[in-house]
Amino acid sequence: MSKYWTIFKISWENSLVYRLNFILWRIRSVLQLLLIYFIWWSVFQGRDDVFGYTQKTILTYIMIAALMRAIILSSRASDLANQINDGSIVNFLVKPLSFIKFYFIRDIADKLLNIAFVIFEISLLIFLLKPQIIIQANLNILLLTILAAIAGIIIYFCISFIVSLLAFWVESSWAFIFMMTIILEGFGGGLFPIDILPNPIFKILMLTPFPYLIYFPSKLYLGTMMGNELLFGFSVLFFWVIILWFLIKWVLDMGLKSYTAVGY
Amino acid sequence: MILKYLKIWWLYALNSFQVQMVVRWALAVFLLVKILRFAIFTLFIVILVKKTTVLAGYSLDETILFFLSFNLVDILAQLFFREVYRFRPAIVMGTFDFYLIKPISPLFRALACGPDFIDFITLIPLIFAIGYFINRLNITDPLAISLYFLLIAIGFIIALAFHIMVLSLAVVTTEIDHAVMVYRDIAAMGRMPIDIYMEPIRGFLTFIIPVGIMMSYPTKSLLGQLLPFNITYAIGFAISLLFISLKIWNLSLKQYSSASS
Image (cartoon, rainbow over all chains, first blue to last red; front, top):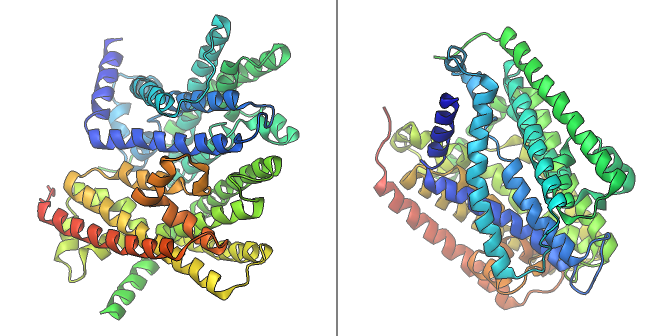
């Protein structure tokens, strides 16, 4: 266990080596949030209800989605693709470490750092922009939101890890990483709650893992999901957690079997 | 002089194209994903503005034209300045030394010698789409259309100045990865008309960080919403910013200490 704690500490320190880069990364997340915030803010000028959302619910959704984005959509797994391509992965293969745990611990370190900063950033924006937002006081809803966020973290880790593992077979796995990022931008729920899409598209998307990364936990926080909708959501969510967890191990095994080390 | 640089750029462009063609399926995937990204945001605009009829006072066609104009400036910048994204390794590993000893401008080498072919492919349908929406909005005044393209060029010059400043930052600090992405995110705030932002953010985005000038002014001029003062201000701002960025670049070169091993 102590070796993973050491990895955690080193990852944290690594993130802070290039401090300017880190600060710029955080500025990026604020800029992205501002664009989305103001699109929705302007939509509600002179209107009370759009797509079944009020200004208060949509701005709360946007803030929680930004929090989920920082927690869930932060992963260092894409480094793996580089390590496979340049051959430095062999350094890990000879060490007494679980490959998956190593990357997962690094991700957790990153996420904790992000949480600290994103809470500060969102609080600052709330202080400056003074939007009306929902402070959820229902403990059950908060616990369900946290549970969905934890499952989302696992799903995102698995997806990004599997996509990076494709570097075992192809030279340019960056094309797939880019594809994953864009699909998540569009259909993850960060830009807009995906239930504003036409119903058939929304229903199909809810069967994929993507909405469970941002949309589902953010919508849960609003407290508007009930009964069957909640049950269906968590069933699909846990289905994807289990499937992807087995898939990650299978793809890693297959990749290592086909791997021939190159590099220095 | 200009011919020499055009020839050098052309050789680098051919080289860059050949490198991209090595893994053709990846080129196809990148192209498809860029189209998908464009389609998703367009779908979002269509769904949103169809529901609300107007967004910040603009109709659906006008909002789409703002988005297309943003894409035109953004794609032009990415097409010509893609090399900026690859500059950090040159600084960290010391290969920037080789840029300095060659008989061409190191700024030109760091900035423009890796054009992105994928962006060139997306540029052509984009220009047709802009023409289509200008036609749909019944804008036929040649002066308005000329001013539109002049302001697109102004946006491109501001983008150039930002990229030069990002390169300078890399020379001084060796940190650039997120700096160039911060530029992209700032520019992305112009995907929608600048009027969606509340004051004082709108003023800040127009007069301090010139996203409004880069991305919104071209469409606003087409819609007849700009005064001659705004256009003069945009031209003056772009030229001043370019001048300042070149000064910063020269200063950063004086700070450079080779990092090669």
